[in-house]
Length: 160
Length: 206
Image (cartoon, rainbow over all chains, first blue to last red; front, top):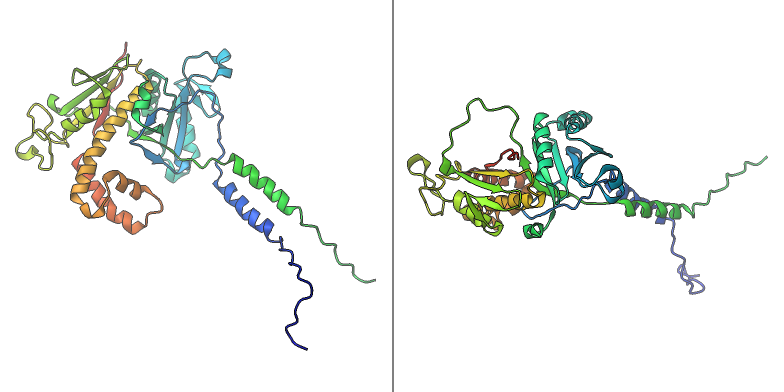
C-alpha cells in the first residue's frame, strides 16, 4: 500500500561507468592541447649554464631556437667534436643562421614578426667565439632580441 | 515486416581507447617554459657620430681566454663583481645637473656621474667559455636588479614587494589588467632611475 516500498535485497547498485569515457576524454583533450612536442631532436650536447637573474620566456610562438654545442656522441664520428650550430634538425654553419632567421620570421604571423626573440640554447662548454659569430649574423638580419637560455641555479655552478 | 531497430554499438571499450590516448599524451607532454637572460643586440648600422663618453663613466669588464676577470684594469674575482658594479652604478659623483639625489654611493669623483650615464662595457675573448660569460652577465644583471629592488622598496613601501617580484607579477598573464596598469608606471620609473646600459662589445680577435 505504502508509496515508499522498501527495496528488496540490500545489494548495492552498480555505479554507472557510462560517464567514465567523458571524463577521460576531457583529460585527453587537456593534454592534447597542452602538449608541445619537441619539434627537433637534439644533435648536440646541451647542458645549459646556470643563472638566477632570469626572466621567463613564454609564448612559444614568438621564439626561434638556435642550438649550439659539441655534437652528441653518436654524431661525433661524422661531424667531429668541435662545437657546431644546430638549426631545426640539422647541423649548420654560421652563414646559414641569417637565412634560417629570415625563413622562420616569414613563417610567423605578420603581427608577431617584429616581436620575435631568438633563444640561444648553447652548451656551457662552448667557446664564446662561436656565439659571437652567431650574434654577428643575428645583427645582420636585425634579430636583435635574444635570450641566453639557462637553467635556474646559482652562478657559482658555472665556475668549476 | 516490422522495423528492426539498429543494434546498439557496445561502447564499453571506449574508455580503454581513451585511456590509451591519454597515457600517450601524458608521457609526451613537457609543460616547461624556458627561461634565461634577455639581452638586446646593438643594431648593425654604425652610428654617424658616436656620443662622447667620459672614461670615468665606463665600467670595463673583460673576460680573458683563461676565464679570468679584469674589472677596471684590475684582476678581480667573480664573487666581487656584483658589489663592484653596484658601487660603480650607485656612485653618483656628478654635480649640478648631473647630480644624483637618490644614489647612496661614495660620490667618488673618479667614478660614474650618475646611473643614467654609467655604462658597463663587457668584453670577452673568442676563447672565453660560455658558462663563465653567462656567470658574468648574471652578476651584472644582478647588480642592476639589486639597485632597482632597493629603490622600488624605498619608493613604494606599501606594495611590500621588490622590483623583480613586481616585474614578474607584471609579466604574469594571470595578473589582472588593472594591476598591470598600476604597476607599469612604477616599474618604468625605477627602470629610468637605473637604466640597464650594458654594452657587449665585439670580442677581441686573436
